Image (cartoon, rainbow, N blue to C red; front, side, top):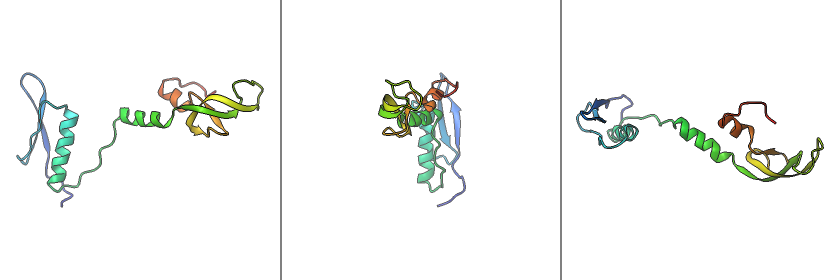
Length: 127
C-alpha cells in the first residue's frame, strides 16, 4: 500500500454536454451518465482498490446542516418561563423544547432553539 498519489483523474468535457473522468493510469474511466460527485466517489474507490491511502471525504454543507437539524428537533418539556405562567422565574410545562439544547425534563430551551433559528436565517438576539 502506498501513501503517494499515483492515480489522478482528469475531467474531460463531452461534446453535447456532460463530462467524464479518466484516471491517468489508463485502467479506470467514469460513467458519463452519473453526476460528477458520483464520478469522483467512484474514482476514490478505484484509488483505494489500487492501494492508495485516501483521506476521508468531508460532508457537504447541506449534509452538515441536515445533521445539525437531525439533532435539534422539538419535543415536550419543562423549564423556566412555562407557557401558562409569564412570571419571571416561574417553572412548568413548555409545549415544545429542543431535544439538544438544555434538557427536556428541567431546563428546556423553547423551540425553535437558537441553533435552528440561526439555520433559518433568524440571527437576532436569543429570546
